[in-house]
Image 1: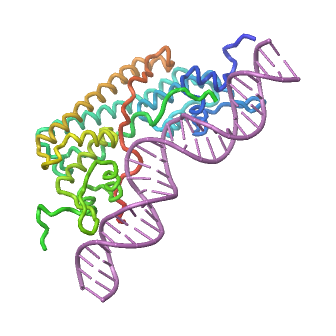
Image 2: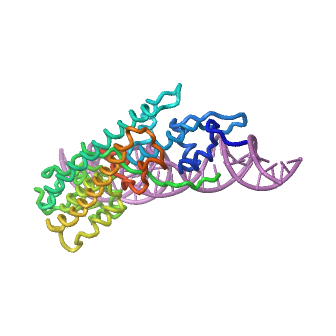
Length: 151
Length: 151
DNA sequence: GCTTGACCTCAACCAAGGTTGAGAGATTAT
DNA sequence: ATAATCTCTCAACCTTGGTTGAGGTCAAGC
């Protein structure tokens, strides 16, 4: 039987299409980022739209969002119908805002660092180099990446 | 007895001066970021220059360096004499380079996001939005912060 | 109809960057 | 001399973002 465009995907298929490991996808389900249905035998069945959802997860992680933040962002998507371009556009715009803020924060840090390099003071009180307000919300990936779980 | 400017500092004193918890300072010692001496009773004694060292740790953490990277950066400081302004200036310049790279990475990401927001595709293959090369080296603080350890 | 691979759950483990607590010793102030 | 703090070590625990493995089930091909 040929594979129709509406057929659901198994976890292995979705892993191959997204480059995410099977174990990571199960983990994402556990955290509420994807909600696959189950077939008669209890195996996960993903919609084709979930490929896009998982792509979003990867992109958002690059931008430093935590799993929880990504869950909340994805919650803005409609659950009754398949998300369309406008839906994705809206939530991508949220990422863009965040990115702007991060660039801004880093640029301000660089300015402070520049005004400090000469003096070498590094004093938390004298210099305003250290500014706890400017913590970057935890950017970058945690440990691991890659598809190793063939189960 | 009045406190002379050359008197060593106890761990509690250095914690108060830097805003870092006592337990974190012990942790930093364990990881090789500071090397306090010990008094007759086995208690840690810090030099006043260690305040600056710990300030550097905080700043470097804001910029996303790991403990290990910070240790390596600090290893460039002279251990025979107290580091001077030129010493600190040199290692701060290393931070500046890193910051430049981070800003560059984010700016490129923003460009890709902008060219993608309209289409809403978010396809890993079609879009070049997702670029694993651009992982930001793990910016931002790990869990916790603050001074709670009164021991 | 059976074998091979893909899938299931659940628990344990990893790294980073610390915190918390127990039990014991050191310092300081009175 | 003694109480009140501080400090010591060591082990256990926490969160995030997953991985690894054991033991068992499901689905597909021949």
